[in-house]
Length: 109
Image (cartoon, rainbow, N blue to C red; front, side):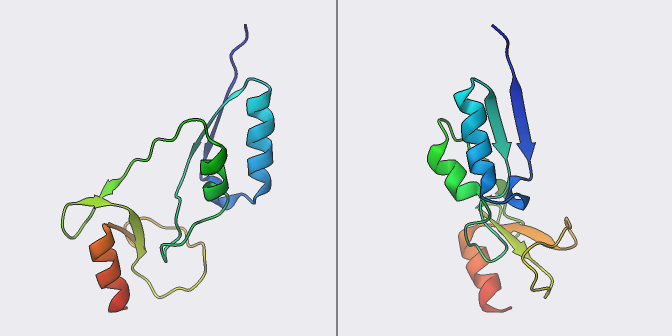
């Protein structure tokens, strides 16, 4: 038996065709592992991730720690005023926040 593995990082930058590719590979016995953000900076479903969730056999969600209160962070809050959907950056542009801190930050933005 031959073992093949495909690991995808940053799948949110792919289009919805990624879902078909992952399905096709899984149908051929290839283990597909996908890791990426499931929401954009406004807290909306992002890219093909919601569709990948629906066909995944196993899902493990991991979270950062909220930088304001220490709870689990579910959101990537964008600290800049740039409106583009995708802005590359780390600590200078984004901050992991829990729901309460995210909603508070969005209210005052």
